[in-house]
Image (cartoon, rainbow, N blue to C red; front, side):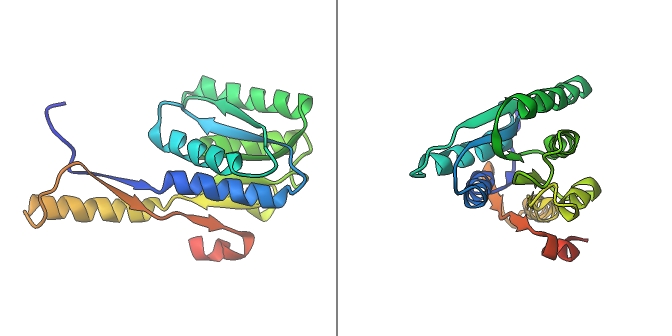
Length: 191
């Protein structure tokens, strides 16, 4: 509390949420309910992505119902997320789904496969790691959202260097890094 931050480096989460929504709308032109693994309501990055998704969907002529599942990051919360996903997929007619977090993506892919919906409804995962790449290759996910943590790290290190060596003394600045959408054909660019 006594120290103000030098800066905060984040992805353009709001815009990534809008992008995710646009992809899902294009993949489901007939409308329908979209399930969102929304992460923690208290995590700004998660909340920004969900807000972007909701804003984009609210501007569509054909209104979409959104079913959000919030969860924390403890082992029990992640197990609960998986159980909730199975119940929702079995009881409701979900036309598309996505996750704003890596942990949610793993559980979403598992639930899609368990219920036989993998490849049958559009799904978008978050972040790039071996399990998500495998899910993209096998058509469990149609796209992945890459939040570019490497660029975030480089930008943070650069700003810290500038601050330490008095090249740049601004404090409290929020720097935004662009994210990317990953397709099966672009997987080799992320290895």
